[in-house]
Image (cartoon, rainbow, N blue to C red; front, side, top):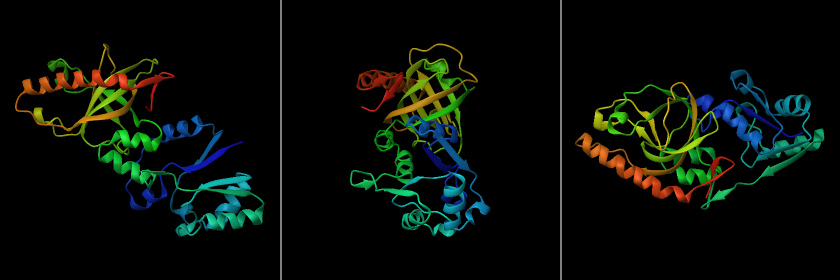
Length: 271
């Protein structure tokens, strides 16, 4: 049986008191199991757990409690009190206790190692296309549709306003080509803005999606929003008419881009 041992929050983020996640925990578990892992085991990382010496962690938890026969870890894996344990200690303990150890070397993209830190920075720069190449999938978020100011409806572009986990790292403010997945299994292309809507004097950052070819009430529903490509930056227009003209252009741009993407198993997959 295969198993992944993990934490709900990365230990480094526990110590710096700043949680910045790529996925919420249920999504993380789903992604792990989707590649064939049988079970996900996790603990809440806290001060008590942080104080466990490296050897004790391996001997009492990984070996004795989880009955590990083979441990697979990354080349930069650290564990135990003050992160004093590494793969070399892990191999030493494996020889002593009788379990195997396999160390995964760095996986590079464009001559730089892929890491969650790198992906977070790329998302914050708005390059969702590059982030997708590093993730092996398009970045997506689950959010609840909540009432908005209905300004989009007045412009002829009614939007769904998403409320997502505030601990998640969002793409840089801008307008994106996205894909919406509904709870009933249907899905639709969409264009999504992340920003404060400066033209209508908005102050808070919001996530709003105009869903193409969709009519209906989505309030209260949990929808998955997949980010495919950045279209442009958020602009402040001199008039509502200019904003409407830009949205019309954005829609036409999205329609031209759609043939570049393909659905597989009801999901948009990498090109």
